[in-house]
Amino acid sequence: GMDLEFPVRQMDVDRLLHLREIELEREAGDHSYGRKAYMAYVTEGLGNLLEWDEITMFQRKNGSFFNCPSTTAATLVNHYDDKALQYLNWLVSKFGSAVPTVYPLNIYCQLSWVDALEKMGISQYFVSEIKSILDTTYVSWIKRDEEIMLDI
Image (cartoon, rainbow, N blue to C red):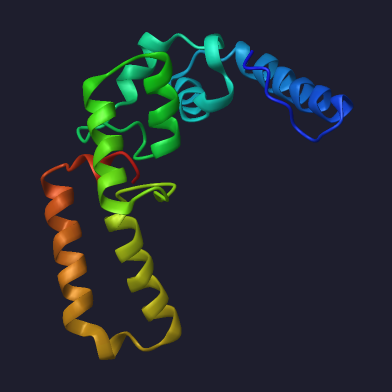
């Protein structure tokens, strides 16, 4: 619709569009929460095929959708929301023009570090750091913090 030209063959574009149609048909009969979440997460390529009002149920307290800048931006283009715009502006002010694919991701990363240290057999050298990470995670769990509860 924007008259952009890409150096690819039409056959390749048609193949991608065909794969998208197959995926949409496969998902069409499923009206579960999981399907809605999946469709909301892959908003970038769906345009007017989504009910944008329904996607707002996946907005996090920080204004993002799934802590994902690209999903948040795609949703914002199709369904304006002040909180989503604030989240994206905050990311750009924090990181500049190259924002991470997911942000924030603190708890997941920290628990991955603990897991890696345990697997390497060197966790005994990081006892206080590990205790701090686990204590923070526990407090988040007790408070039913959105970041940990949405990605158990």
